[in-house]
Amino acid sequence: MAEEVKWGNPGALGLAGFGFNTILLQLHNIGAISNVEPLLYGFFWGGLAQIIAGIIDGRRGDTFGLTAFTSYGVFWIGLSFMFLMEWLGVVTLSATGLAWTFILWGIFTAYMTISAIKISKVHVFVFATLVILFGLLAAHFFGAIPAKVAGVEGIICGAAAVYASAAVVLNAMYGRWVLPIGLHS
Image (cartoon, rainbow, N blue to C red; front, side, top):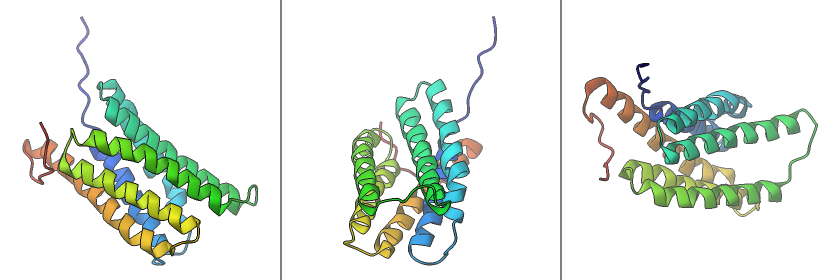
């Protein structure tokens, strides 16, 4: 009989990919960087790394992780691809279309937030601040607020995901929760 392969917790990878790429894009939104790195990088750490984490979670039987990481990985790849196509002159993006895209992602994230209640307080914070971020981005693309408003809130969201990633890695290495995340039972 073959020995069963034990998979590590892919949450650290997925949360790092999401968190750091979110921070990078929000640094662009607040004007700290003006180049295209956030979205070009979104193909890989924001996108591919999260898809890998989601597939591993699926293999481990975690429907929430599978759905969250693969969905947000595809989000990053899709967003990056849209802007790349615009920069190449292939398409012209519409602000209204982008706003509605963020509204739909906000709806998805809202029900993922409800599910995150069963995981930890940090997960709820990450998802709740992401719902807010998607709402602010929609408001920005509808012309109601400057990108800086979304950018500041998005840095908070990304930083929470980075914290959660660090907590998962440190827990795995030290065998205890070095950084608390408020686990729910």
